[in-house]
Length: 213
Picture 1 (cartoon, rainbow, N blue to C red):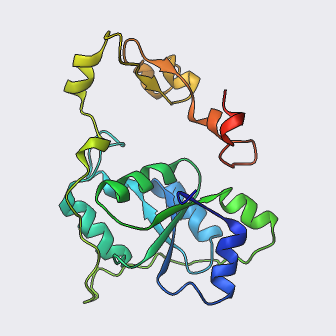
Picture 2: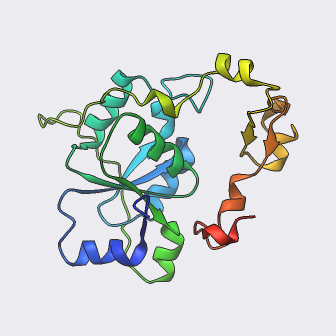
């Protein structure tokens, strides 16, 4: 699938000098993400902190405005011609979604993440700081017309609750769905729970189609 890249293929790109224009981004949220990134990361990687994409919104899962998106592309020095590879767990899905929503043409996720990368014995870097390109003069990728069909807002969800031809799926953990985490916020009426972890193997790989029940 063009959505994922395996660690072997990524390593070949790096060693065969085919990585010109390749952007590796560790994806996380907040101070813990920065700490983990500085401890160990892929060669020449940078960090994408999703908290910076929310513009201080109380909702951590808000999709950024075009202005904020463009600001992040500038900070990370991402061009339209760059191939972008995200890694580090479920946060990569949000980063991939945002990039696709605003029309970046080449965005993938490292299947198996840094865990498999380490198990293969591939090289890692110890970074002392993130790289901020905000002051550079290069022209970076700017948001295209948003793909509105990828999103639905809460008013549309309210209209669809209880309709026989609509099934709302909550992919959070079972404890979050059952209000045992995140301040007991519960779930949308009628939503069924299929935790995102059901789609991944214990080793962190996306399951094959016939492995998903």
